[in-house]
Length: 267
Image (cartoon, rainbow, N blue to C red; front, top):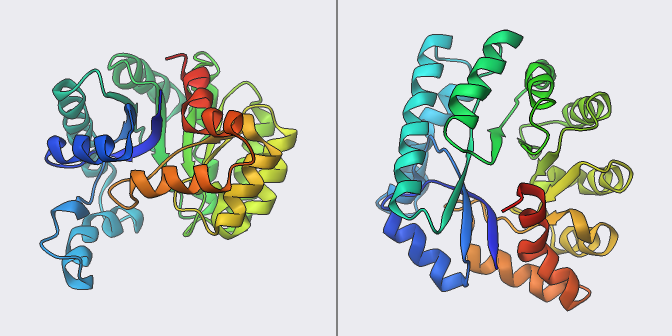
């Protein structure tokens, strides 16, 4: 089974399924989305930038905590609707607001993650070390649900120091599976080295900084690599072809294209 472990909700869902079919992807893990860049009329900077404005406002802290939570609940509804459209093709990862208490975090996990049968938590895009530190209540809550991974964006705007802070959280909470989204970007060598020493660290191969980073990850930690496209920002077909092209063996390819995420999520 070929599993794309990182896509965002695309509208209409039929377009998302067609992309999966074209790529030979059997199932996809869906994440909520704020900017629907696939709805941009053209692939121009102006059209895509207009769709991205809401995300930029969220990352900059322009919204009040209440507004952020309200918008997050709306995206969860949209995610569930997409999954219901094709339950044989999709699983979900659900978001959690940062900066709430440990008790509120635990209640959110129970109500909005477990309650919706999501398979993991994320995506988080921490723009500062302070925001990475705010992940700790989530790590603590996940110690009660050790089959739920947390997916953290580790490309820009996350800094090398931010990645180090995330690694420290992994060391403090070794039972919690952590997916390093985009494999650290330009810091991919450090992230691969960390995955070699930390049993619960996994590598999302979407938005690869260079084909060499994917090849190295598949060679060094084949059991930790996960096919991901980050659709609509990436293309499932191209991401699958990159893994197949640089993989050192067919058995490693099979792990990255589905075996590893099946084992991690127990699907």
